[in-house]
Length: 167
Image (cartoon, rainbow, N blue to C red; front, side, top):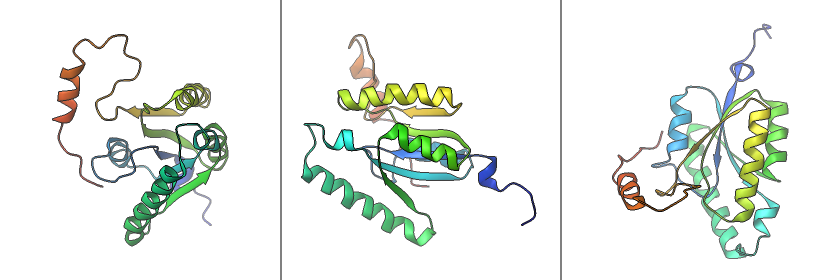
């Protein structure tokens, strides 16, 4: 060992996959790639989300199969998808003890009350820990709108945006 800090010690990013489990046209993944810093590709099975009434075993089986397919696509490059179980705040706390996390890249989730509350807690936690959270809109939906005036124009603009190739 030469005593110099490794690239990971200098900082790294996390790409947090939530509902959008694909490589193509994935803005958070593209932005993290363009940042040219090592990144962990992360999916979290959250017990609170999994037990929420709108979840089903069929849904979670599909998520698991999608994650396995993503890993098969990653294998030739030598990269790995990190899949963990735990509440998101706890998982990010654990990761922050192991790595110098500079940023988290994810889609802004437009799910249910439990994911909205989780994201509010995480936003506060990220600020406290000086981690920049880069949230990208998903499917043309804007979280927190006070009205729906001109929503269709925004949706149309999103749908006509250029396709983002896989990295």
